[in-house]
Figure (tube, rainbow, N blue to C red):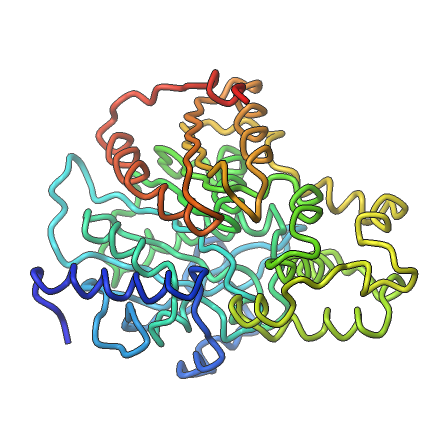
Length: 414
C-alpha cells in the first residue's frame, strides 16, 4: 500500500526509531532471500561497455520489515557491467530509483550515486535483497533523497549478491562500482532518467570510502559523467588505523570482513597466520550480515585468532604482500576534481575521527575543494544521523550551481 503524504512521515519516523533502537543502524538479513536467485546469475557474455545493462526488472523497496511502507518511486533491480581491481569485466547488481513526482529544480533531474554502508558478506545481505524485504537500514536516507526529487543509483558492490566473495574495502572496485551504477541508471530506458544530466555521489562508512574512491577515480575512469560533488562520511581512509581501533571491540567483525574481502580481491592466503579458531571465524564471517556478525564476534581479539598469539597488525608489519594491499587502499592520494563534503563525528567509535580529518587535510594539500564538517553525533551510528541535514542542503547547492566554499582550515584544527 502507498501512504498519503500526511501518513508517510509518521511511518518513516516509526521505522527509523525501530532501526535505531537496536543500538546500531542495521537489521537482520538472514531472511532476505525472497528474490529470485536467477536474477543474480551472471551470463557467460557481458555487454561491451562499463555501465551497460545486463538485465533489469521492477521491484518494490520496503522501508520496514512488516512491508507496509514503501518508497513511493519506480524501482528497478539491475545487473550491469563494471570492472574488478585489475580491469577485468564483471557483473554487479544494484537498483535504480526514479521519483514519480516531477523534478522542480533547474535543469534535468539529478542522479545520486548512493554508496551503501557495511551490509555484510553473505549474498542475502545485498542491498537489493534487503530492500525487497524491508531490512535495508539506509532506506530512510534514500527516501529523503527521493522526496527531494533525485534519481538514485545504488550498487550492491562486487560479489554481494553475485557469485564470489564481496571485495569489502577494496578501494578501486568500490569506486568503479559506484560510477558504473550511475552510467547504468542513465542507460536504463525504464528509469526515464537523463542520459547525461548532473550527478553526485554520496555514502557513509564503507559507503563513504566508496564515494571518496569514486570521486578520486572519476576524472580518469568516467570523465563523461557530470559529477557536481561528492559526500564522503566517516571514511575508512586508512584501514590499518581503523583495524587497530576496532580490534577487540564491538565492531571487530568489520575487521574480519576486510580480511576476507581483501583476501578474495587479491587472492591472498591468510591461513598461515591463523589458528583453527581464526580459520573458523574467517570462514564464518562470510555468511553473516552486519548485525549478526557484530553480535557473534563482539570483543573478539585478533590475537586470539593467530597461530602465535599476536594481533593482525604485527603480522601485517612482517608481510610485504599484506603491506602492499593495505597501502593500496589508502584514500587521499589522488585529487578529486569536484567539490567534496567530508563529514565525521568526533565521537565515532569505529572509524577514528583523526582518519577522516587527515583525509580532508590530504585532499586540501592536493588543492581540492573540501568542506570538512565535524559533528558530535554519538558513536558511529549517531554520526550518520547528524550528517543528514547538511548533506541535503549541500547537494541542493551543488545542483543549483552555487559555488562550493572550501574550509580547509577546519581540517587543521585539533
